[in-house]
Amino acid sequence: MHTLLGSGRLASLAPFLERGPLGALLLGLASGFPFAMIASTLTTRLAEAGIDKRAVTAFALTFLLYNLKFLWAPLVDRIRLPLLATAIGQRRAWLVVIALAVMAAVAWLGAADPVTRLPTVVAAALTVAFLGATFDIVIDAYRIESLSPDQLGAGSGMSQYGWRLGSAGAGALALVVAERMGWPAAYAAATLFALPALAAALLLGEPDARSAALAAAAIPRGLLARLRETFVAPITDFVLRKNGWIVLLFIVLHKIGDTLANLSLRLLLNDLGFSKDEVAAYDVGFGLVATLAGIFVGSILYARLGMMRAVLLSLILMAVSNLSFAGLALAGHDNRVMAAAVGFENFASGIGGVAVVAYLSWLCNLRFTATQYALLSALASILGRVLSGTTAGALIEALGFVNFYLLTTLLALPGVLLFVWLMRREPGPPAHAGAAAAPA
Image (cartoon, rainbow, N blue to C red):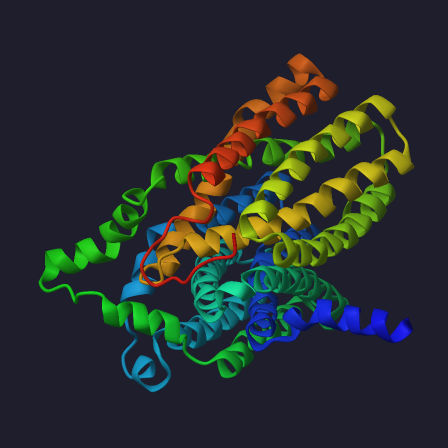
């Protein structure tokens, strides 16, 4: 009996130990660290230096570059870096160059003193954000092109594990080193988190699937044809597919309710009188554990159910999880209810992250992977963030927290219904050049 159980556990772990998912873990570790350097780490440093709170919060605008990365993603798809691309391939050449550039930018940010050189800190933070977003473009494309169709679930899960661990690990390392050796040394130490990306380049090699897709496509001749192939073709390729517009509408709508609920959670916790220690223990600590558990379970569900059914299940779970926040608002200051609500929501988000990221990855034509994934991931978050910034506060004041979270649950339903409709019209993602059959 014990042998059978042990072999079953090993079998469930086997997909995570293949070369592709392991490479995705390394890429995720590297991808998370630049974001951490301009998020809580920079906020802590600026606050410690006595910088005005309005100036500190203004640094959040640097994150807009992550939302706008689709604007320059076509250049990553099209431009071959001289000499290096010939030696190691286009994707790996970009990965190496941007990894080294990110390391240099983070070290520059650490060396700039916010008290005496605040404009330099601003310039360095913007540079880290731009290069970090470009790092994401390259890493996402490289990950998608390096995974086989049956590895998308495990690979997406491992990538998210890596991002969470890389972001948290780099931030923690920076704080520990800063306490002992100062901020310049702290930022320099954190640059070590870029090295897993270089290890992934050695492990995975240059993606053969993309090379085959490019070889099968006609080579554009003339400047206008090349510009069209770079900036227009990735969009027309998508919208002209069967159900392409419906898929885009689903992507725009499916996270509205979830985004509104999550971005307002800290307001609820503050209103209910939870202390910083309670928030740190339950929302941050327990929430992270629940997310990691959800990622693991999501990867298994993806393998068992297939991609489309796993996405549908995750959409339903994420919609229902908003009700748990309504329950917390009704219960008031109760740590057990907060733990249950936060745990369920983060667990559902972990499952959804695996399935939806795998789905978005699968939708990308391998000729335009960097451009299409950057665009799809931006579309998936932009409407919810705009609504959160413009209407969430007014809705909470008008409706109260309970009715607000009931509303966010209703706002999640159009995405669920659209996806059900898509599943009936087409059991798998829209077919496109350069892709094999996906698990239904």
